[in-house]
Image 1 (cartoon, rainbow, N blue to C red):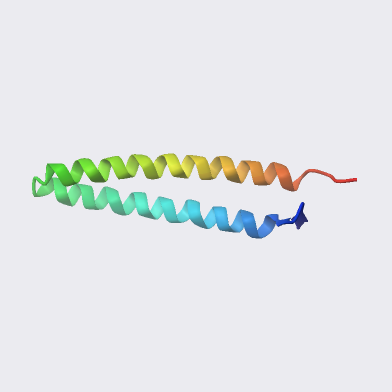
Image 2 (tube, rainbow, N blue to C red):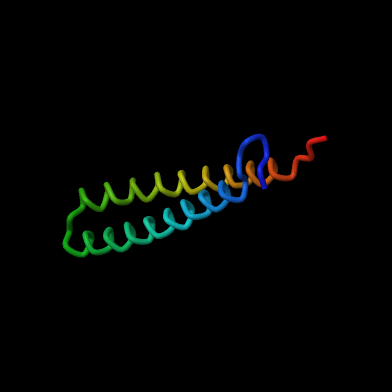
Length: 78
C-alpha cells in the first residue's frame, strides 16, 4: 500500500531484511570473537564485542523504524 508517497509494504520488507541481516552479522561477530579469544587476541575480541554492541543498537533502532512504518501504514486518510 502506498501512503504519502511511500510504498509501506516495500519499506517494511527492506527494514525486515536489514533486521535479519543485522542478526546474521551479530551471530558471525560472536563466532569470530570466540575464535579470537581462543587464540588470545584480546584487542580483536574487544573490537568485535564493541561492534556486536553497535549492531544490537542498530537492530533496536530498525525495530523502532518498523513500528513507526507499521503505525504509519494504518493511518486513514480521508
